[in-house]
Image 1 (tube, rainbow, N blue to C red):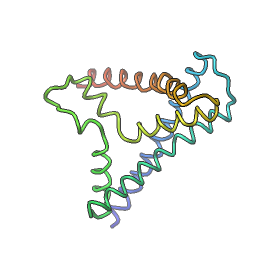
Image 2: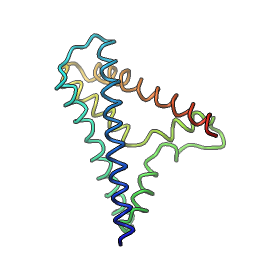
Image 3: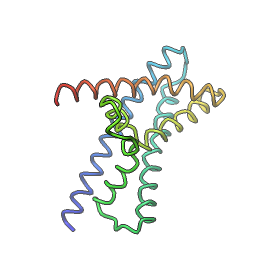
Image 4: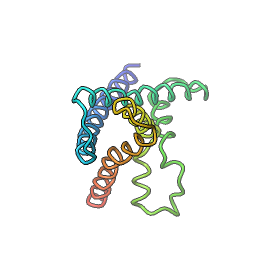
Length: 162
């Protein structure tokens, strides 16, 4: 029981650090995108948009808990991590037929990232008072640029250390 609690604490700290870094990256990417597209909004609206998009972490964890319940698994750190890995796009590609750089990129995308994009689009629509299509277009170009930069960084690091 003590080992399980320690693993849970490390998992929560890991998730918190990841969300903090993701929020920081999202803030930078959205600022650059807003400057590029000449979109003016307040600092408070930008922070509200980022906080709203972080609801994806809650939705993802609720989905994991629901899937564990549906599979009749016990709630252990192992089952939580296994279910979290099953929501990764890298599990649904054929490794033999895929280039390594695409495989690395697809393993970085999971269900939570897709929810973030949707929530960012909805938040931009509300803050900027524009149509859904335009909001998702801006979202894909601003936040998508950050994801692309992350893929490039991850590929360079993977090539250097392997």
